[in-house]
Length: 150
Image (tube, rainbow, N blue to C red; front, side, top):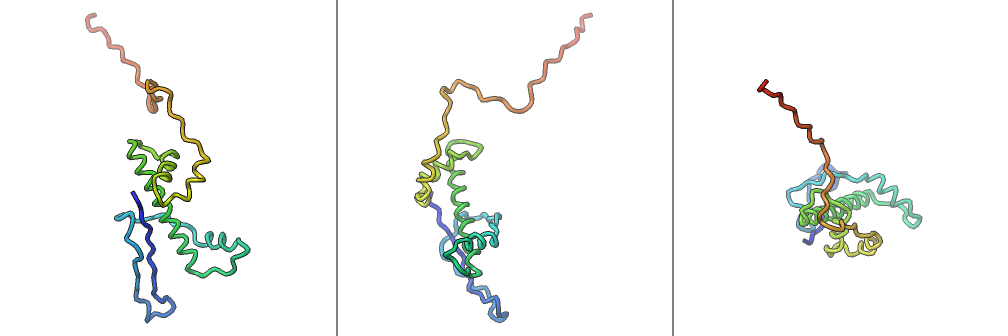
């Protein structure tokens, strides 16, 4: 499943009230249709990280905002790929192996393959006869019934 990345570019001039009409332009079709991304990455921290490089001088005000949005969309695509992989394996939890498989099956994440090769694949159990450990309550002891024949 190939995911697309979306950037909404606002051309509204926020310094002049007479030009505040929102003139959004959609650059690409929306991925994750019907879902709103609630996670926000800290723009000030991104700006500080960008300026920590000696080669970078001043950073425009919109740059860290765009980088934060790109990071949100990148993470959403990566997590969606891992979730799809977990669903395909009928797993209730997303594991690192699902994330690794999502990187190897999605063309957009080809640049991560070299990094993911460093981490070993999880080892499967030797045979399928082993029962998984039970979690939760212990079974209660059977109640002794009193003899009514007395």
